[in-house]
Amino acid sequence: MGPWWHGAWARSDGESYGPFHFGQKTAEFYRQNIERPFFNHHLKGDAPLGVARASIFTTGSNRWHFFDAWPPEDVDDAALYLHPGGRTDFEPPSGADDFAAYVSDPNVPVSHTPDIVVHRDDRYVVQDQRFASRRPDVLVFASDPLERPVTLAGRLFAHLFVSSTGTDADFIVKLIDVYPGDAECEVEDCEVPIGGFQMLVRGEVMRARFRNSFEHPEPMEPGRVTGLRFDMQDVAHTFRKGHRMMVQIQSTWFPLVDRNPQTFTDIYHAEPDAYREATHRVFMGSEKASKLEMQLLQR
Image: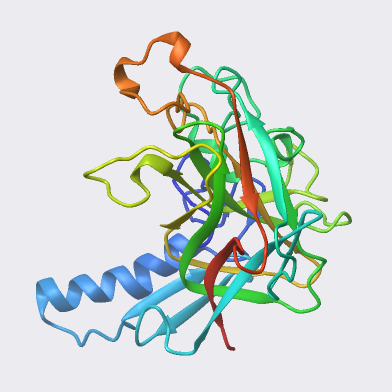
């Protein structure tokens, strides 16, 4: 339940996906120990259920967890804050007016994959995100190497304070697990070196015009700081010791997300001259502390 495991690269036994190995046959375990008892109980009525209310496979640590509730009861609310200098930390920043800025051009969008593709490529969920982190229109924040494992289990929200020179913008936030430089590949025939690999754990977009209502869109006021808070979907993932917690922020993710002209207009009928370059700021001050809100498993 960590990275978005679709089915394109997964082995039939669910043992690996892309360059990542789960250490066990997850699909077989799921069918035999969760799915089969569930259907035997509810469809045949010939056996007690015997299944936890929430059976969760935690990527990173490659462990099954069985909870009486979801989110689990034994979690602590926490926030991963963005700091000046491209850092993340669980402690909030102390500066008053710090921000990071980037220029986004919808005519030169950030791709969702390092490959040249005509249509959406679902393999992006297990592809190295280093190609994006090298771009000047992507903000990158990363923690120091972790001194102990950190397990996320439950809700994940992005809470940003931003401004723009345009009247609309997309803000894409990606939570990434950065492997140590000396990490070794987990499967045979790795396509890319795993050392320093930036693994996508979660990624989500907020179109700023919908920040207050999906029914009643409204423009951004150029230069004015506004808050954005949006759901990045629940997560169960362990950042192992020695790994780093990275956040990437960008304003295009093409063609996974359609291009925002960055002008408040009818996007579906927008003329080419409506697509304009804009400068976006992400704030990190004590009163405007951009962060990811998460829940950390205590055990």
